[in-house]
Length: 143
Image 1: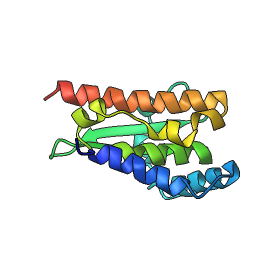
Image 2 (image 1 turned 30 degrees about the vertical axis):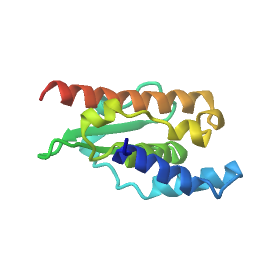
Image 3 (image 1 turned 45 degrees about the horizontal axis):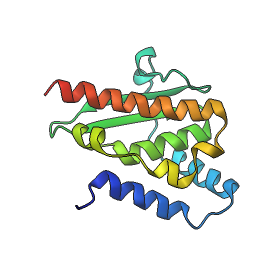
């Protein structure tokens, strides 16, 4: 069975992190990724886009493109969390909602990311994933 795009992107992320054994270097890479995110327009920093369960403030805004792909925007007021959001957007942004719902998310486990985050950041990560999956379910139900 061939890999779908979401699996390919996850493998690319794993390869990018592979040269860095030290977690300080991995955190630096995460921060760089977060800095590459386009700033979220202020009009999207509203309560319905805020992610509950995060210690820092995180917003994720979703819409459906004309092609039926999930379009995501995200931002955070914390550098590492913004980097985590950038990773998630890289995997999920502009993907088919049905593909999102049917693809295993394995890159976090492979990177050991959850084990190297504080409990509050780990909860925030799970909340971000949960919200993205919720958006995918909502847009799939509208089809």
